[in-house]
Image (cartoon, rainbow, N blue to C red; front, top):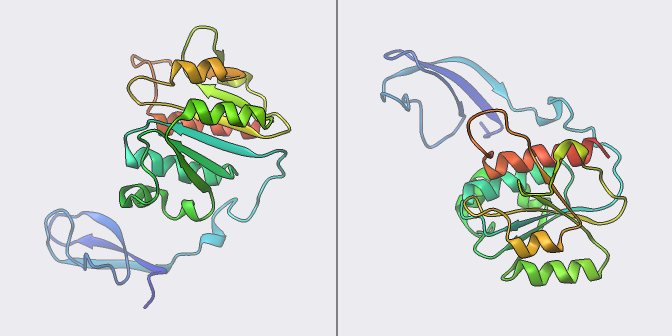
Length: 211
């Protein structure tokens, strides 16, 4: 049976309920206690039935994400998957940012790198200057002085690149100087920022839906 089918299993020993792809190398043993499990249901994975999967919104202009010096491969994979979901066509992966050649990236991107083209660049500032010469509008996501709330973002009609930067040090100050606009996500709790992949998701949604 192909891996397009999955089962929901329940552990007879500890009661854990979990999904597993049919044919998975993990087998029928409980992933928590390794006890025997029983099948509750078996179903085919139908991606077409998921809401919005085949409904691509009409968009104007080209969107790209510039990911600069992000260390976590998991975050990069998540950003690529989100980029695909919101219709971004390219990802500029800069500095130490891992690429889809790293299996840890593809573990979370789940194939999104097949739809979002990508390129690696050692120097993001040099790349930005080239993009600006080509007429790109550059937006940055950073909580810095003079930044506007993300609710104020408006998607330009032409080519637009959205910058997200290091989980620790934030967006490179030179990149902020090169940006045409900087936006931040207002925080309402004790922490001062979101995980970078989550922040990109929020900004990408605002950029696409408020265009």
